[in-house]
Image (cartoon, rainbow, N blue to C red; front, side):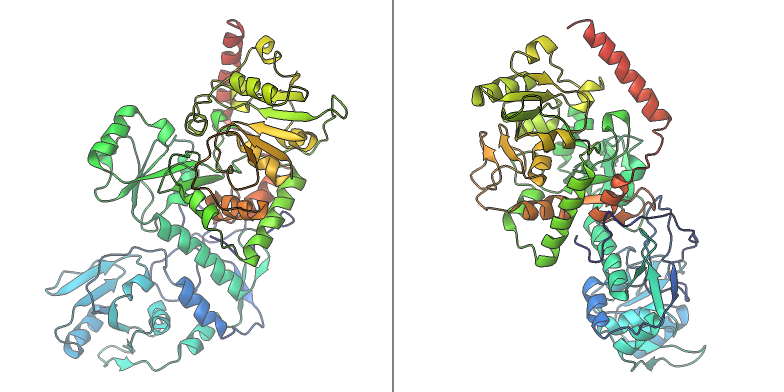
Length: 560
């Protein structure tokens, strides 16, 4: 889902005062629009006059990306070779001009049913409505007039009451230039001007996201505090995603988005029994400032129709992206710049930190071993039998008997929320030092190597040019960038550069939500937000969860 003209960390976004008014097909709306994503704080592009004259290449761009009008709308099943009309009067003319053809009447409000006529109302995708049409009868100010010409469908104008439809002979390029002339748009994430090409690309970015969600009929296993942030990224355009509590509530014939670690064995069995297609949703790789266990919602998620990206037993969509490669120069330049910004800002999955950390053993080889949550699915699947943090430490010491080993327990374990704690006396039999404070990014920068089971810290170390040794099978193992001691699947034969890995893993595969505008956004926007030094208050739920974590840590300390 690459996007040209993306904001870098230098760009500072702001909340802009847009109107919340929206209409499905009302005349006078701008041709290029922001979809009405659930919970979004921005409803429309801010536009202003300019001296720019639209170029002829915009026709190809708009047709390729299929944007304009209510391009996020519903896509009802349509008869082949139909005639599309937009009013009852146009319907009467169509029945006379096109006898025997299927007619689809698309109006803002439902009409009384008529024999042989398919009635459709509300927000629909105009490009879809025209996809199998042989003609359309529209009004002169209707968005559909332009889109019909762009789609190459014969267009008839009904210009006045009682008149006869006339074949529209206007050129598509002339109509598009008229719709976009003398206007420029503001980037909703930065407040900076965008070219018309960049605005069209941004609309295309949103369209691809919405189209990828069509067919998802519900969400299962999503905590209530995640739903407002996940909902926009799974929105299919016609109505908000329904979060359900039981697979029996799932819509027939549609896929179910699941947060699998939060659903019961009984629910999993019911999904399998009913043969419901499943879409796996997980936290993204640049998640938030703070822990999911503290109920801090994610700014990014991954959505995979083939399986979890951390499970080497299946070939996930991420693995396919990495394996197939084919990243163009623009994408690789974006990846290189994104990696630079992430490293300079000291960003990790849960935190940021750029403070330099001293080397406690001088010139001796320093190895960082990040602990993980032992019952996490990434460990249970990707560890391929290695699920114990203590066992990982033992193997690292066997591999590097003379190294200075620093062990950093997982933040969720330190917070008292999850399993995986190692008593200090046992940990220090294999590690030279336990590091609780300090950001993972700063520790990676200090270390010579990072040894991991499946931890994302290994990927973060690759971004920083560090040597990475894997003992399990994380998604980044097997591509020639790591030394792999785990059972990497034989199908991973491609060799990739770090920037190619970044392009697949951070730019294309995840979905990101801008916390300022509430709109889905490119990776660069979230990186810019996370790089901002201004942090927001955690809120009531987060505070309660942190208190709970402190209590659990005290209880565990009594039994160690």
